[in-house]
Image (cartoon, rainbow over all chains, first blue to last red):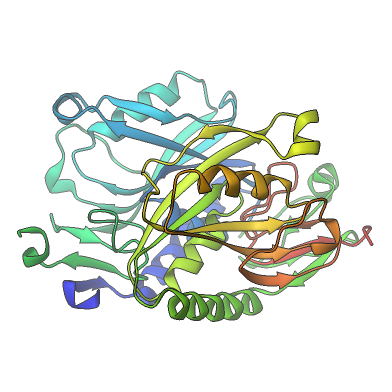
Length: 178
Length: 200
């Protein structure tokens, strides 16, 4: 599996950055209860490490969304396959994503969740690809800003594989250009 | 630097956070059951066992939300080989749950299981009811193989015969939290497994 990829961030580099983000988030929320919402599936590993680095009372929930295909690519509109179990009203909510690229899906999710009247609503992403933005969305917390690489590993897949790599890697073109 | 007042700690009635990030203040009613390092080492061992057991064949690891997400994240990193991942979310029906283990599926799997090696990853097994039900449900989908790996096992609590294939730690009856397990929906983020002292 490692032959198919080129490591972009080693496991240690990722862990170090995750701990920094966790410390930052801890400081910002000052012991107030935080609802961390992970967007399945790609963000689950980052979320698992991130919340361990957040000191304080954290609640957790997950959303699963799926694209409508071409129309999702233009509007960002996605179908909610699994919604949140809890009300967001008056709660501090932190969305955790693996990658923000066009920003379309994230913007769509933010709009839906904002309507539920959280006390605050922020975004923490592991990776940011600002060159791909089609709509303005700026994550509040960002692990790494990267170029438009084909990323796998650390929860992120290609055809459902590579999620179990501990590192963030670039998939070699020969693997997906078959 | 994070500080939590005594009033806040007492309000939560539980665990507070000390001044150093990662420090957890021990209140009278909780204690560490499994340290971070112990958990990490055991998960590495489980990963090796599982890798050897599947001998390079692809494994579909299925996590039961929400508690197992943390265990799953670490477990799959310890498995060397092709791993796909999916999640199920279930909730109990109340009374009928207590007798049959029947649960409502809030989120089903996204893929077919037919012909696949499926490994269910759970945080804890106690009565065995839920898992027993889920296993029989998933068996009907004709996987090539179907096994269960649980981080924690409380065999003394079984009300149905159920033996997981892989177990992290066999523990007693105490109420546990942390490492994905919640205490009234909070504290899944604790990096170790804690137990309430008041339980036997």
